[in-house]
Image: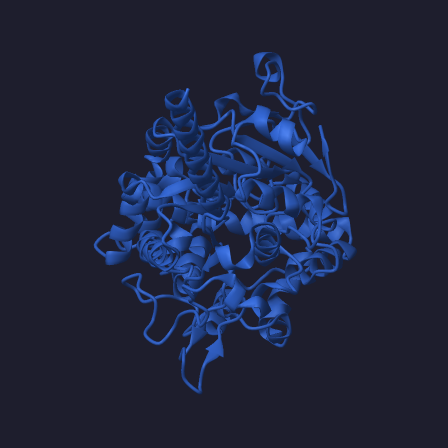
Length: 496
């Protein structure tokens, strides 16, 4: 009897130890470090960083809207676009633009490197508990997501990878690797969670490609990501197409965007000019876009000295546009194929083409990966892809990793409109996504405009914190949302 009792006690003690260790393991998993990687503009960039002459580089180096309006010569020529009574002096227009952007601090060096003395002033490898002023009063975008994640996960377990988003995305990924190692060393964690927003999704894509074998990421969450490119950058391939119908549709859609923002105000002011004048301006711009001499001067004398050496913007080219962009841009002198900048761009686009392969590799090793893409806005009306559904910036087909999406204002038809991955509004078929079973779509939510204390922001935060496994069934059961979700003006969510 005593012998059996001893065995029973040993068994019970063993069970207690197993359960105790399991609970510790779960506790550690519960508090796994979460690192958020922002997108364009997520961290301000400065000249003379760390000195008494430190100065923020605002508005892509153009200054405030008021500064632009003070340029009477530029405004005078631009206003001519609103009427057919006077023609635009294109030489004067180019000269005015050139004078405004020449020598601006935003652009990188011709070799694609950020200029000496420039960068961010908030690079921290310490957790958000040490930087509460950074996120506690956040109202929208990445900072609001950080805030919501901190509220759920604890600010001592949340980190922000702040970086100079102009630089080569591959360099940003190398910086993220250094950051991950620092966080792991600080916390003792074996793995982290990476959340990539907008351009941050491209950084995560590069990180996957370079460091997937390190096996130190538990979950990847891509939020409105740019890893497959942004179709408005087709302009770099000299793909210009402007129509008054698309311009008017865009202005109508963007008036509803970002309530109270400067962007919304500008859109309302432009729309207030009247459909007739806006239509005339669109027609005049369409004529200019077909003038090869004007386009060559615009790209080489305005865009090149303004933003033409910024690697990250070039690297936002969709993979299938890359070759034509290089061919057309180099033909007019907009891109030097012998430059270090071109080497960076070429390297990144090879990585971009391997995204699907890298995802497959990680999925086989039980790494959780999810994508959230928004839709419901008309495409930016300057390229041949203006009929796309976008989130205000990134095309839904790109952000989702390959969804089949109807043109804006249209619905899918035939076989494309059938199946379990088709949205209730017949706009999206997610079957063609890289991750059809772990990609979610939110309608009528602007690009990265997650606002304070909203259901939309909390949904993303819960995904980041692992409140549900990254599959449709688990998210529906734990969080209540299906694959297709609608957001109202207050960012309350409902299933479509």
